[in-house]
Image (cartoon, rainbow, N blue to C red; front, side, top):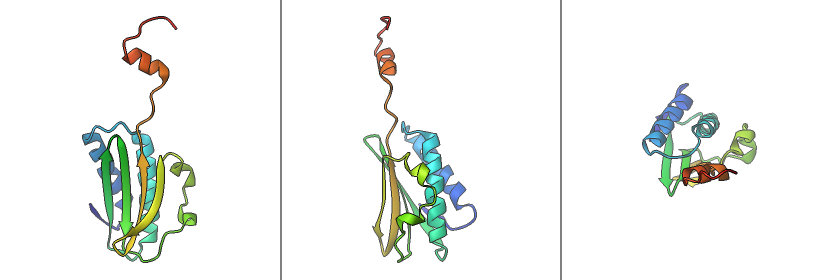
Length: 129
């Protein structure tokens, strides 16, 4: 999806991402996803000040959600440019790469691993602990 770079880009990226992930019925944490997409979009918008739009990409394969945002800037984003490092710890993996003459920053999320107690209950185990 192409998103225009405006004062609403962060909100629009979050809204579109959460709606699509809900439609896909992904098990990823919506709270973690919202934090990550907000931080990623804000960083890319800051980096792409001269750009008219950025590209938002979402893929879901085998419960792994990959979210990428790309701009046409020839300047590669530096790791020091990531201002919200704490939220990046929520991602399974993240990185950046060249993209069509510009750059793409991406992250991946997996659904949370259920606790052992939750697995026993969902399997029908009713024996006392």
